[in-house]
Amino acid sequence: MPTKSEIKKRICEAIDRRRDQICRIGDHIMLNPELGFKEFETAKLVSQTMDEFGLPHETELAITGVKGVLQGSKPGPTVALIGELDSLVVSGHPNANPKTGAAHACGHNAQIAGLMGAMMGMVDARVVDNLAGRIVFFAVPAEEFVEVEYRLNLVKSGKLSFLGGKPELIKHGHFDDIDMAVMIHTHSDESLTKAAISASSNGFVAKMIRFVGKASHAGGAPHRGINALNAAQIALSAINAQRETFQDHDAIRVHPIITKGGDLVNVIPDEVCMETYVRGRTAEGILDASMKVDRALRAGAMALGATVEIETLPGYMPLKNNADLRTLYEKNARARLGEDEFCSVGHRTGSTDMGDISCIMPAIHPYMSGATGPGHSVEWHISDKEMGYVEPAKSLALIAVDLLYDRAAEAKAVLANYKPEMTKNQYLDFQNNLFQTEVYDGESD
Image (cartoon, rainbow, N blue to C red; front, side, top):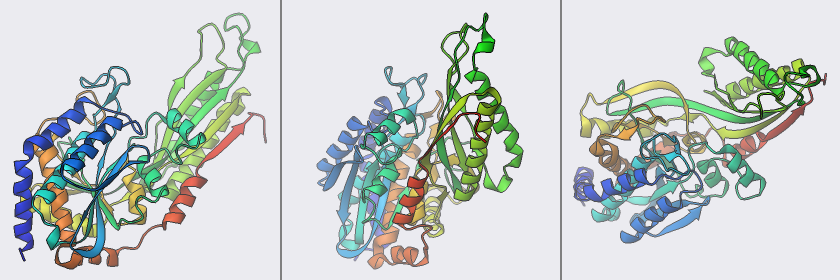
């Protein structure tokens, strides 16, 4: 039986032989971005690639998800390697879709390239005879929480249960046969080393807000109207006044935008729409901040005698990176990239639906370099294909080997040390209870 080091070497050599193919996948997806739950061509590319390598797989999971399985020679735990299919909206990006504004300005194209590269390396190296358990190669939809109104309409019509890809997959049981999950996110942060991992990151709830006033002539009879824009502005000021009540350890972030400010300049605005996230380190912190935001929104309505409609939607749970999986990622990163090319960072205030996975099973969401430009900006691009596409493929595959070699001893140890924050049913109940709609008429006690 080959040693674990020999198996890892074979996989890396196999991935190197497939380098051009892996890079073509990443570049193709970069040039053909699709938004969440609409990633039909990207999912088709993943499915075709799995077909090429003889990997049995399912398609159309949570609309566009693709799930392939590589079976080890002995029974054991199942490890999911994950890549995200979707892009976001950055209409000014040079590779943006001119019709939708979709652009890969966050690195999900690199995630799919790395996922497919890991699959290629493990299949080509024929390592399954030396592993116990299963490796799932999971291309998942809709991590970016965008086009909220579109997704909410899918929920209301019964086509979705949640607005994010991983929550939807959890809901429909597509993680029921998985024991732990690993993915790698591309970074462009010059303050980080080539490989990095955080301790945790924020979760959030989303809010869709509508102030309703009364239209009238803005010059001739403004006293006859109820200015919904003024109500919204007071609400925004009240939200800002709440910021000093947010405790530092809760890492609260509230960042509303006005999506409709009125119709005509000479008409008192009778409808103003806003959206916001309420982010935080813990579920309790998020719920507390959410209550304060709602109170501020009511205050704006009360001041002007307007009505406010507040629709609160479940977003993502806070992420907690598993310590044992983190150690495996660190060991492989230091061995491959150099002792000084790994760092740990504390809490980060962005959000990911990998947080939802981390509530119910061991999971990590580390970072690897390869990009340049601020994330979610027009400058973001893959500037180092070796780090952006190829090294993540190797890292994902090597972690899977670590976990499932020697009768999956490492994977079993990870599971033995892990205590889930929630059961699946508790998680679903928590998220479902976040769906709330309130109509406040501005005059209620």
